[in-house]
Length: 242
Ligand SMILES: NC(=O)c1ccc[n+]([C@@H]2O[C@H](COP(=O)([O-])OP(=O)(O)OC[C@H]3O[C@@H](n4cnc5c(N)ncnc54)[C@H](O)[C@@H]3O)[C@@H](O)[C@H]2O)c1
Image (cartoon, rainbow, N blue to C red; front, top):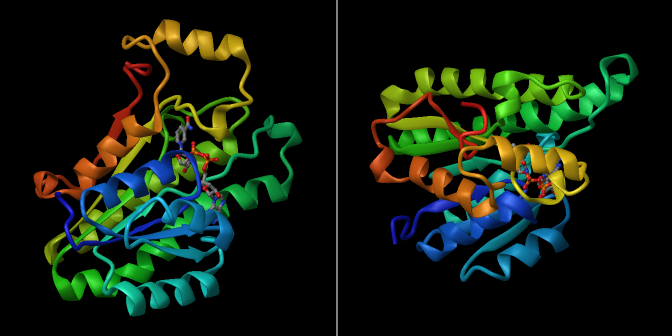
C-alpha cells in the first residue's frame, strides 16, 4: 500500500498502459482520477478501482484540462501524482505526412503533458511534494522511420521532463519519464507479424512487453523509493535498444 490516500491522475486511462497504471495505483490505496477522451471509457476503468473517479478530458485542449483538474481537486483533493500517459500515433512517411498528422500527435502527446503538468504545479509546489511521470517511448530516444511526428513528440517529452525536474526539484517535486519499447496494447495491435517476431528475436528478454511491465516502472518512479531520482528516462524495453 505505497500510495495510501495519495491523489493520482492518470491520463489516457481507458485502456492499455493507462488502465493498468490506474488499476495498480488503486490496488495500492491511491485515490485515482481516471481521465479519458469519453466519460464512458473513463468510467469503465474507474469501475475497476474502489473510490476512483472518472472524467472526460481531451488533454490537448487547455480549457478542458483546466476545468477537469479543478474538478478533480474539488472531488479528491490536491493532485499529488500525475501520470501523463495519453498518446496517439499517426504514422506515415515524411513526404506523405499532413500538417494535421503532425499537429494532432504533437498536441496530444506533448502539449497535453505540458497542460496537465502546468495544472498540477501550483498544488504540488505548495504541498512541497509531488510526482510527475511522463510516458515517452524508445522512439523518442532513437527515432523511427515513418514516425517523425511521434518521435518528435516523445523526444520533446524527455526535454519537458528534464526541465520540470530542474524547475520544481527545490519544491520536493520530481519529474521522470518511462520509455517503453514494444508493448502489447491496441496501439501496437496492427503492426506486422514480422516486426513483432523481430522484436522477440532481438530483445534479450525474448518477449514483447506488457502494460504491467510499464506500470511497475511508473509506480516505482511515483513512490518514496524514488525520492532521489529526478529528470531521468527509464527505458523499459526488455533490452531491445541495448
Ligand atoms: N504500446 C507501446 O508499444 C508503446 C510504446 C512506447 C510508448 N507508448 C506510449 O504509452 C502510452 C499509452 O499507450 P498504449 O500503448 O496504452 O496505447 P492505447 O492506444 O491503448 O492507449 C492510449 C490512451 O490514450 C488516450 N488518448 C488518446 N488521445 C487522447 C486525448 N486527446 N486526450 C486524452 N486521452 C487520449 C486513449 O483514449 C487511450 O486511453 C502512450 O503515450 C504511448 O505513446 C506505448
